[in-house]
Image (cartoon, rainbow, N blue to C red; front, side, top):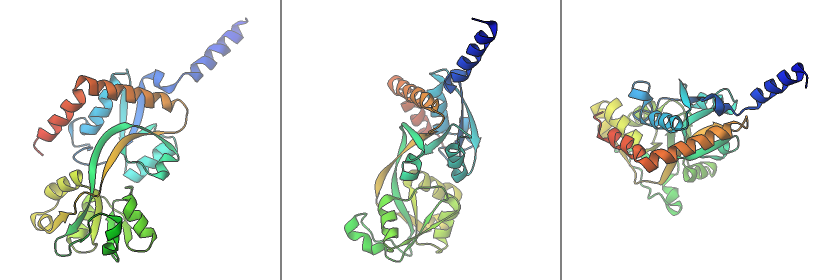
Length: 255
């Protein structure tokens, strides 16, 4: 074989290697305190968990902060390889791959005590929501049952801003409810709203459990190697007790 052919073979082999062989992945994230935040050590408990899972497989992580809607687009367009963390919906499933579950929380409706939301969370009782305007942070997924009610014309969503701005609009009486997970929503009520605003807000009973995953770009094909490496690393953290330790520290820490 000629020297030229040997060099060509080497170059083609190098280009064909899976991306994870380089030991580095770029993950788009956004502010979602207290779970994900540039103000937290390690960018928060979820990025810390993700980084440690990849580290067990010899992969380092680079994070970039974006508004959540843009973070999703960065992955969909293949400019960043993954984003953390997201719930499943048809739009995301059509273009992306999902890891094993990383986090779960309960979906509720936050509402103003002056205008109670009298709904038991069942389809049979959905008429009680007729005429309501429900706030939703930009980039968040709608609760499926409420999205179906919107399609039937029973209620409408007002999409925009972040979680805190939606809660403030709710306290001011500008919307009727906010579709949000309870854990982070309650933290924002306690930490970001003033005492008068916080006193006005409460929640319905949990509507459903919502699971969150690391989302990987569907292309290039090498991203599946990152997905498999992350799942393997996450399983290792669970088996060793390290995942449970990270969550214990998070819930015990003063905030």
